[in-house]
Structures are given as structure tokens and as C-alpha cells.
Length: 497
Ligand SMILES: [Zn+2]
Figure (cartoon, rainbow, N blue to C red):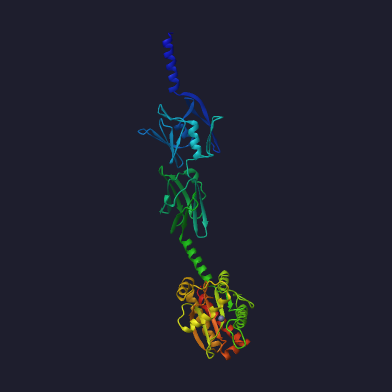
């Protein structure tokens, strides 16, 4: 052959070799954890790069493909991830991420070819542990690759209703799920949901769910039908854990149960089963000082007698803020009652006034002062804070006090009621002048989350009343009167619950 023609032939053969991919060794496809037989993917080699058909690749991954002939773009959808490759272009778009491969894609004989190594690596990035191309053994390993994102449905019967729990492989928002019910069925339309209807219909039926019918109604929407044994009155979707869709269903019975447990809680709130008795003052604070006695000793003596009465005659638990001569801080007294979830807080005090003629009994509850007398009493009782090194009460002007009273004491109405009942018993049972029920800014009552009162038993500043206050007989009468008042309150608030 002439050298010239031989050279032409060689050049032509070389061009052919560069331009046309040649068949190369197939890639073994192994499915791990899946009951699928091993298969293989044919490959072609072009410029020393191994290419694989993207259609066939999608096939072994159980993904969907769409080719746009105008833009020459091929979209592969794997679960919720879209992967877009363009013909004769090295760039691949995955979601919002762009990747560059070392070679351009090829379009040949209506097949779309991608470089196997690079393209696999991109997929592996998004589905680690599920797709892996091992170059050494020329094997593509695929595991647990499913075209579904709603993996399982569990139905749980809870005390307050039925809970449908769907475990998903991707995040769903509450807005992706639409519920509607008709003719004894509840339908959950899940936008973006993909289901394997055979697998999901195996879900164990429970509670009010008699049958489950999952179906892929469109490319974008999965619908799961639940046939119910009784109508639901309330239904709601929650997404708390990002990979779980929760649907709660409540029937008439569930709602009735809920109502009765709500009533039970309300009942328990008023079940008078624990009382805190607070003997005023103590320790270095003597309280009001009489001719021969201290308020702190009288309040403790009455408190002991009251405790004894309650313990002997009822099953109510009694706690005391102090049982000896010590001085608990004002705020610690109500905190103690709150912490112990007491149902009543009763602070026992003894009154005093510069005017020695003043005598009688009064009962206070927390609220803005309406008289100078009430202000005087509150000032006197609040003066105990001078014994507390760091004070949290300074900023409580009368206006602030009213606000914190309103904010903190939701039991004001009941406190007034209790005060009235106790006051009436004290006035009639102890032969004391009735000075009435009053409200005042008592710091010791602030923050109590239960009905709470202060009893100002009698005047230590009055000669005769001081004598009475120090007699065991009178102390017993006072304890009895307070006890009777508490019992009346208990009767009223526990009635009908
Ligand atoms: Zn006092």
C-alpha cells in the first residue's frame, strides 16, 4: 500500500478510536440486604474513561428518569433527591449543589452516558452507605435503596385517643399532610410522599383503625386511607421528630374521657388534703411585744393546737413553716407551701396598736389596702424584713403590690371566702370583737399559689387580751375557731366535686 493511503488509514482509525466509545467490561451490581439477584451494567470506554448508561444506572437504583429533548437534560430522581445531568457537559446538579466531573457526559444512540466513577461518587455523597462503586473490583454495591419515603405505619392506642405514627426517610412538614374524612374513612394525603402499598398494608390494625389502604395516587402524592370503626371528632397532624408524621384521632369517648380527667384534676385541686400553718415571726423577731409576752410564742402555741386538732379529726396533712423558735424568711414561708403543693396557707399572728384600748379579731387576705388600719397592720407585719439581710421586697410600692397581687394570686376569691369563714368562727367562738375581714399588702402572703389568709387573733397591746392570748384555754378556742372555719371552707369547695 502506498504510504500516503496507509497514513490516511491510520489517522482515520485513530480518530475512530477517539470518537467512538468501545465496549468495556461490565460492572457487577450487588444488592446488599435486598432480595435481588446480582446483575450487571454494561459499560463503554471512551478516552480511557469508563461510561455507563444513566438509564440503566437509574434502573438498578430503582430511580425515575426524565429526559428533556429540548434542553438535553436528563433528570434522575432518587427518593426526594433530583440529579440533573446535561448532555456533553461535565456539570451535574444535585438539588442546589453543582458538581463537576472529570469528563463530559455523552449522548449516543439515544443513550445518555455518564462517567461511572465520578457519577457514582456524586450519588454516594447523597446516599452514603447505600450506593458505592468499588473501582478495584469493578462492583457497584447497592443496599436498602427504596423508592419510598414512608417506611412504616404504627397505630397506637393512647389514654386520650389513637395515634398514627408514620416513619419516614425524609422530612415532611405539617403542611404536607392533608386530612379529610368521609364515609367512615380518614384519608391522609401526603405531598411528596412515596409509599410501597403492599408493604404498608401489612400494618397491624389497632384501636379504631380497621383497615389501611395506602396508594401512590400520583407522582407527587401518596394517600393513606384508614377505615375507622367509629367517627373521629378531632384529628390533627404533628411533625415533632423530623422523620415522623404523627396523626392524632379522638373519638367521642376519648373526648368524654379527657373531660372527666380534666374534672378529676379540677377536683383534686380543691381536695383539701394538705394545709400549711405559718406561725408568725420567730427567732430574733419577737413580733409584737406585750407587757409580759411575745407574739412569736403565742402564734407558735396556737399553731401547735391547730395542727393537733386537724390531725386528730381529719385526714388532712399538716405542715408548719416553723416548729420552734426560728425565723424563716417571709418568701420562704409561701415557697414552702408551694413546694409542698399545700391547698391552704394559714398565717397566724397577733395584733398590736399604740392605742391600748383597741381590741378584737380580724382576718386578712392579700389585696390593696382599703383603710388606714389595714395599712398599719400590714406595715407592722411587714416590718419583719428588717431581720432579713437581703431584701427582695423594697420595690413593692402599693401600686406594684397591687399588680403583683393580681398577677400572682389567682386564689383571691377563695382567700376572701376562707377569711370570711374563719373570721366568723373567731368572732363568735372566742368571744372577741369582730373587726371584720380586710385586705392588706402582707408580704408573707405574696406568691402563695393556694388560698391564703392571715389571722390577727387579738391585741397583745391590750392588757386584757394579752392575758387571754397567753392562756392555753383561749389558744385552744382560737385553734378550734380556725379549724371550724377551715372545715366550712372544705365543705363548700369539696361539695359537688
Ligand atoms: Zn405578726
